[in-house]
View (tube, chains in turn blue, red):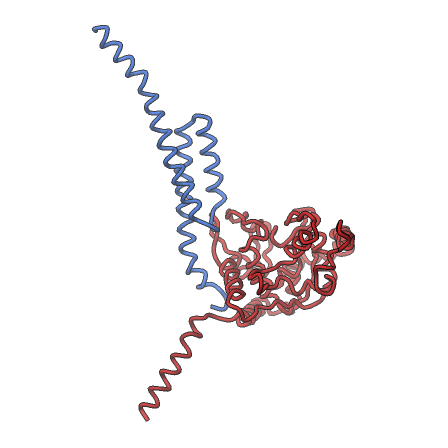
Length: 101
Length: 279
């Protein structure tokens, strides 16, 4: 193999994991921001578990564990979406069970 | 004749629709709630509902009665009285902020202040009194504020709860907000306050025996064995929310004050029994 080609191949091989990590960091940041905003949207219906997952995701990201952080942010997003759905449903559903309605 | 009938029917509909859309009045809610709990527990006398689980469970009642020889909140009440009577730096006392010098008034709290357009709880009034007299506010959930509140409640022992919802749209909105909060499911476990205290009182949820909504606020502040000290009603609200994995709101937030307003109105006519003990 020619020397320049070998150099390019080695450079590519070494930079690939860094590129993946950079992608994971960006993915995490996007997911985390979305989860935070959805959690906020739940208003007085926020769930404690969502906040816990967000904290854990942030902590993992701070330690450079972006893959783990991404997974946790995704879990937080799903929980936050359920709490928003609960808030919307309860706007009317509470009347069905209230005494005096 | 036909014309007269049409006019009468139209008039009837016009009058009935706004009534139906307005929903029930607080007093209709209260009467219906009292009837609901009476039917659920026909052997429990109305005034006994203030004793919560002790009115429904014989074993729990025996434990409670044995504790009443030396109630664990007595020292806190004495401490509360001392703080209540000790002058602020400006020479005034808490008595200067309250009707009847703050004695025997617990049954009127919370009330809706039509000038400030908000619900005023006893603890809020205590801290506003401090601030008006140049003192720092106390922490909301336990400690000194619970002791002062307990002393003030003790001076109202036996007086019937008398919460008023004035004929005012803001007062009615506060009451309705509290009602909506009480019946709305929250948290990952998807429970409302009513899930336990309206739909399932008298049943066990793990190691907790559920008390009925009726009479609950009459006991506060309470000394809970779990806490090992006195705590305010808003501390309990936060604990309940947390139990169902819903983020608790700040003590004395507008939501919790409105919730207290609704819940206490439901107990109108029942005697003040606070402070009390709970597991």
